[in-house]
Amino acid sequence: MDGLQLYDTHRGEVLPLQPLTPDRVSIYTCGPTVYGRLHVGNLRTYVMEDVLIRTLRLLDAHPYRVMNITDVGHLTSDADEGEDKLQAEAARQHSTAWDIAARYTDLALQDFAAMHLLPPDQLVKATDRIAEQIMLVQELEAKGYAYRTNDGMYFATEKLADYGKLAHLDPEMLQAGSRVALGEKRSHTDFALWKFSPAGQQRDMEWESPWGVGFPGWHLECSAIIHATLGDQIDIHCGGIDHIPVHHTNEIAQSETVTGKQLAQHWMHIAFLKIDGGKMSKSLGNGYTLDDLAERGISAEALRFYYLGTHYRHPQNLTLEALEQSEQSLRRLRRLVQIGGGEQESVTQVNEDFRHALANDLNTPQALALVWQSARLTESPERLRLLQEMEEVLQIGLFKEEVLVEAPEAVRELAMQRDVARSEKNWAEADRLRGEITQAGYTISDTESGFLLTLN
Image (cartoon, rainbow, N blue to C red; front, side, top):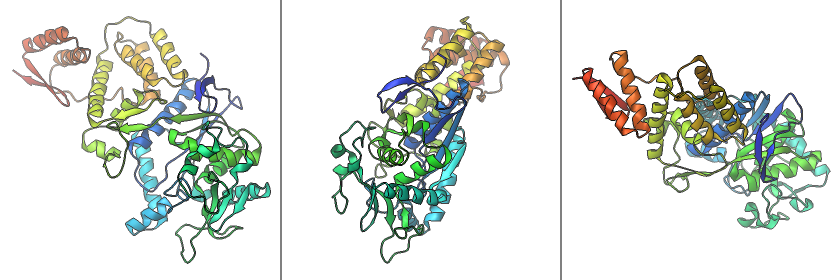
């Protein structure tokens, strides 16, 4: 397999990626709305997008990625109702929207670094592209697709025969229309391009426009940023599956209306993450952050390791118990990487299988299985290079040294071999190795954080 095969949400099948230009794969990933700390649901999406970028590099492609920061315009309802999320959080914290955006942008970038995410080639704030967003609304208005109501400028979706094509739903069935009263909108699916500041109020973030003082609608920023940084068309557009029926549907409507061209060749969407079999919510207190996990002894690398165990298009259920097991499993894998095994399989074949797994729609569960297989190979320079290549893509700390007690090298190696045997449920071999450790004058005990060696 020479290149990446990637599932396209619109066409509903896995298809070869054929970049618009041979020397670059243009990618846009929807970034965070910076009114709060990132949680494990957000992070799964960003990790899978990171695997996409790293896989393209592995396959000698040349990804160029732009990510936005939503620091204005994302209302508490996807249906253009409620407060701006940043303005609402600013009021709750007795702060300003500008301060809230700056604080949580910094925290998001810290979380990105902790999760070993490659930085985008361009990181663009919505508030830095207001002029471009206003120009986009002007173009839509000139084409007859924008109209005015008492609270803003709206996109007239009834003028598009293919509106909702990404979601494969009829316009009347789309999410936004099912939840709100029509009001002055001409259609339930019409969406805000520009919202006016409420009368008698001054928002922290508002700008002059040809239609009045206000702020851009949430969907507008992504179209404007894409056009300004990547052009009229891109190769891959990424985001969470929750963006399909509203946000990405509306991006397509406004972008393709202006350009007359297909916005993205591939739409990559990451499935939902459930917590204990249900949804995340503030009331349940299960929107875990990296800090929450660290307090429980769960590392960012173990979280990333856990994400990779499920294909990005499949829903994943996260529990704290499963993450603790992931931490232990990752430690066993690291020890196996350190000591190697006795298997003699071809390193070249394993390398080809690893590349094929990732090129086949980012099959990370299969890729992880091949990491375990590589770790069990007999130590050699080729094995080391293969594991380094795997680590470059997966970023799970394969070469992070585990802390071992002071004991002779031979005893420590026996202990690590026993740990590997236990992970493989080879109890007879584990008991045999325990006996050798005992004969050497040491007692081995199993703890939640690994094994402990003490003198007899």
